[in-house]
Length: 262
Image 1 (cartoon, rainbow, N blue to C red):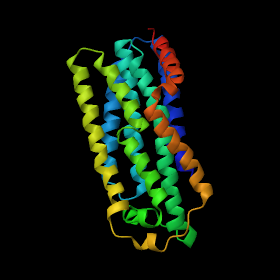
Image 2 (image 1 turned 180 degrees about the vertical axis):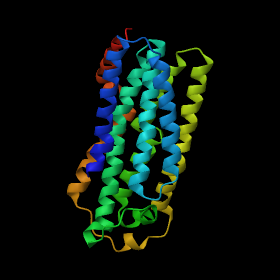
Image 3 (image 1 turned 135 degrees about the vertical axis):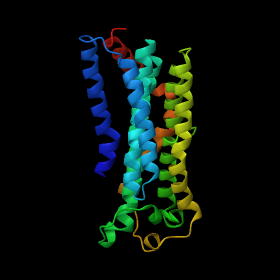
């Protein structure tokens, strides 16, 4: 349960603290903060995705994917500092919000499965990918909620993750340069790359034979399911009506750009 807070909220709080610090430094030192944010964002995206591809434990896989997701946010912020236009930063803040919901849902769903398949039986083994085999046969609703979170993180419509990444790319498209074309291609390819570890997880839940852990698993309490349903509704709502968050993301982006002297 705490992993949902750590990945969905705490790392975003750290990112905001870093941006506020850079905003103060921008007034004291004339450094290329835009390219710096853009470069480190690209590094985060690539390294996070490549590390997630290697994982066998569900929690570690989701944790490494958070590194990549924060990279998308940094790319949006770097684009806005370079272009002096708020759209990229608004997309970064929007992705901050959507990632908190999607990754929170993913960790809560994984936590419910971890509890039902292992902890409720007195076992303290981690939840591994093989444990997900055939989950939909016994836990169809949990499988659906986890799939929704993973597809959103992969940037598929109509989930909120698609709209937030799309807004970041719109910010890049407003700058007519070869660098930004490269950034757009890079982000698009890495979104596809992330599906290389999200899609197999979903495939395991629906198309593989039921694992021994699932066959002997305990029931999932409705108390665990309720917060997941709330997050799932929010993910779909923001994916269909992204304007619901505009008053938050646009104001945050305007403050961000102002801090960098624009």
